[in-house]
Amino acid sequence: MSRVPECSILIISYNTSDLTVACLNSLREQENISNSEIIVFDNASSDDSESKIRALFPEVRLIASKTNLGFARANNEAARLATGRRLLLLNPDTVTLPGSLKTLLEFADQNPSCGIWGGRTIDEHGVPNPSCRGDMTVWSLFCYSVGLTHIFPRTRLFNPESIHLWSSVDAPLDVAVVVGCYLLIDRVLWDRLKGFDPEFFMYGEEVDLCLRARSLGALPRVTPKSVIIHYGAASETSNEQKLIKLFRGKCSLMRKHWTTLNARLGQYLLVLASGIRATAEAFRDSHRLTKHSTSKSRAWTVVFRQRQKWRTGW
Image (cartoon, rainbow, N blue to C red):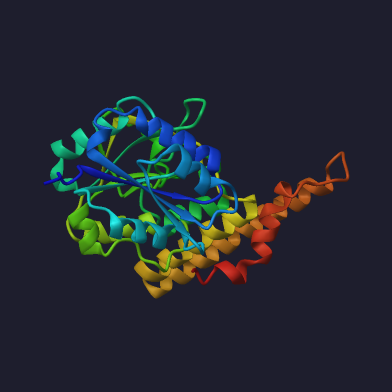
């Protein structure tokens, strides 16, 4: 009789062939990986992801979707096939450093009542990037919209969501949200929550998951001893499209979890945020020494012009 895997590692790929291969190679080097299963759900990639994964990683269970289901629904489908007692949601643009997975699983065993666990994520230069977040509130959106978050990024008062900037995280820390790039969850809790809300195509789904989990008594917690590299936004084709998806996710969260009044106020604050930044872009471009502005420099202008598209959420 085969043992139930300690962990099912779920990776959702979309046109990230080389990064996915690097991610899977790093998992091969992990300790105790033999008692885990790896499931890769490919979201109808147009690159050579499917052929590379099949050829290089026969031990991986690959699900090749004919359509792009988005991050939430793809994870739900992968989880439906998983058999582990815990699920690790892992982005394809990550590299697990030696011992990181073993450390995270041990941390979960030592803190079983938490239900959701995470670690530290760093970029390729070793600089911490978000692996956990504080709650989004009207105050946090106001600070972001008017620029206080940018001016005082390392203060909890004006940047309450970005825990990784104002907290040293040198000891285990209870958090509001564990970011979905590196999130470990008990299978029983995942099933109680029915996984991700499929309304969220991409961005915001892990915030919604943690909010619902906390309402059931879960206490998301991260450990600084489990460290991975996270490159970030590898599947995005443009900065403005990423921002639009981010804002759609935020608006869906507000609509689902906030009062009607606060959700309306939050939408206006995001419109204000994009309007201020679009105005700054226009001012900057009008004073450029060159006459050519890049598509990246016009990203906020595009976001502001398409505000009717994202302010209703997904």
